[in-house]
Length: 204
Image (tube, rainbow, N blue to C red; front, side, top):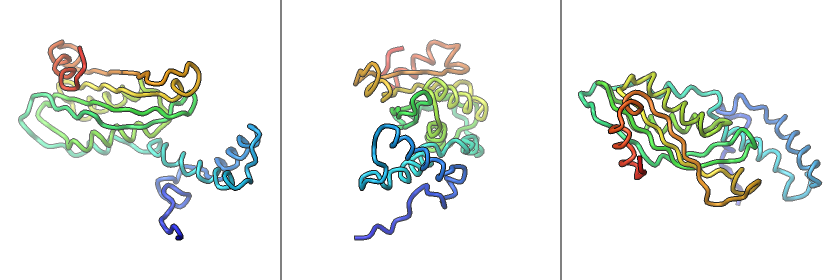
């Protein structure tokens, strides 16, 4: 059976416009040769092309502006906490270019305007689809919501497993990293932080 589905994020895909597939493929062949593999054997013949498409996909957020997702807000007289929790994300650690993945919990206290909850998930996704460190990722999400929504406060907690720690180096499967970024009332009011932590099932 022939697979006629388009190759996502391939050279002709506009989402991969900034990716030089030919250079990635050449570099991948060099890596395969450098580790003693035969880049022309059956199992590896198409690997350089696959890897190029993979990088185009997992780094697709590099040239996107997540702030566009917050362009549309809605006037609403709601001044209590809004929480979007358990947002799955995957990213590449910039130190070893190995994946880390987990869940993000994002909250804000509106100041007269709200945003569609799916927009928050899109912000997380596009910041994650870059070469990242988890600390920066958490701050980028918090800073953007703080700047664009102008809420009373913003809180972000991210929990992730890093394969650069679980399958190499110290090799500690099951270890997880937790980062947080708080702005406004989430920083100045202990009760606000405690409420957020209770919603996501974590101690303050």
